[in-house]
Length: 205
Image (cartoon, rainbow, N blue to C red; front, side):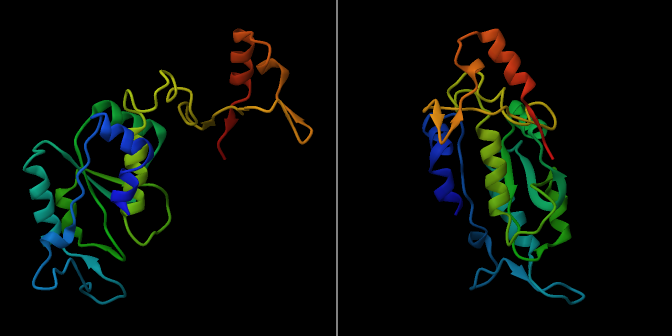
């Protein structure tokens, strides 16, 4: 799942142009015993399996061999909910990131001793941390200089200003099913267009 996404679209472009470098580490490579076990049942009972500490500690140690100062991020619904501002801060700091993706029920609490930052993509539960990790990666990488192409592409996007979603946009044809492109966008008057855009930012719900 992760390799396929990182090998497509803007992720592929950023990697190809040496703007970012990805390394995917399989926890199974550090699993316990002949079955390469990475999870186990929780003490105290309960459903589901928890990510074991040993494979995660070993995987992070391995990752830090070539990235000693890397920040360790854990994807968890208990983390700080992502925002465009927090993602922008990560992109600007250009820290190397080690992103841990828990699975199923969660993780052994002792894993938190490795973690610099807990990040959530929203207050809901998914099967694993792979999708949240990809959301975080995509949102950071597209803000790196040279990835999107347009000089101001990332500056005028939704949530660049808190709680504001980008103004409506149109392309050809000029008329479709009786719906027309606003005249102000067709007159070439940049000051009027800019005012219309600012006046038509939408508020996030």
